[in-house]
Length: 411
Image (cartoon, rainbow, N blue to C red; front, top):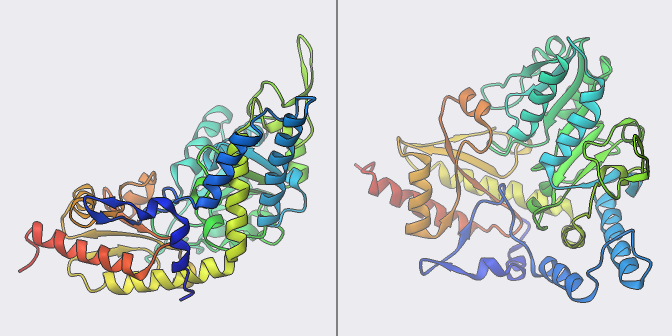
């Protein structure tokens, strides 16, 4: 395994204790911890610049604008965009998908058109399309899953048919860690002229992403899942599609002119960024990208594969425990969902927190259709990142054995 354990010293929160025990943080799929470099970049912005962008004719505003646009350029380089103007700052993945759903879908979808999703999608990549379908008369269709929790490609051409105008798919499941086979899905979309929208909330933080080769039209992701601050994310789109789209929000900053009865939009990407943007968060986002780029995303992915292999091996030692996710490590990320006997996921999470200082997620993970597909009401989920160590996994396993004792599963 690529030994990234030395990075833990960069993360202040990982130094704290919970109930007198060292914190074991295994909920990075929900939000990642922040290194000191990101925290300091945000604090330094507020200490030394703190002015609005694009508007002021004074030095602080110019410096703020430069910092904000420099962050955009860093994000563009990180994902292989051909220009920073292809990157729109948003509030996060959810907002990015809503931008596409309302800015593109609401204005182009018609009665009888089809929007294709997968059963494993996060609610953020289902609900916006449900709303647009309701407004436009388009219909929703779903790609189902195989027994190994992967997208079933058997009926690909039947589901993605000539009526299909949008194919929206996650880059990595936040529940099972499954990485859908995007190339054949995108190829099927191309055959019928549909656009491809990728929810990159889990994919972008954990593996190398190059939009020039991934054959998508839009990619949305969040800073807070990749060591950055909350409240900001990015939407990448093909330039020609961004030019065609209407903005999903109106207000200040996103216009070139406003009359009493109509307005003209600012150039891409600014026409999508209404109001005062999250400037300090953008600076922090840029610092997070710098941090990950210094590690190298191939090393991040290698570490995740190795720590997931170790975790799956240790979890297999626990009687009554079932893991939900692909068995092929190359086709999955480091989100490991599981159940333990008949212990409710919330009870399991509480015991791990109180008895072992281990923080995991419990519930439906904003993926209720997938829970129904798996025939469970909820799961417990441990999820990993660059700061996760084998010691963390060992403490998780110790806590799970303790849960079995408490609930009388030990014979």
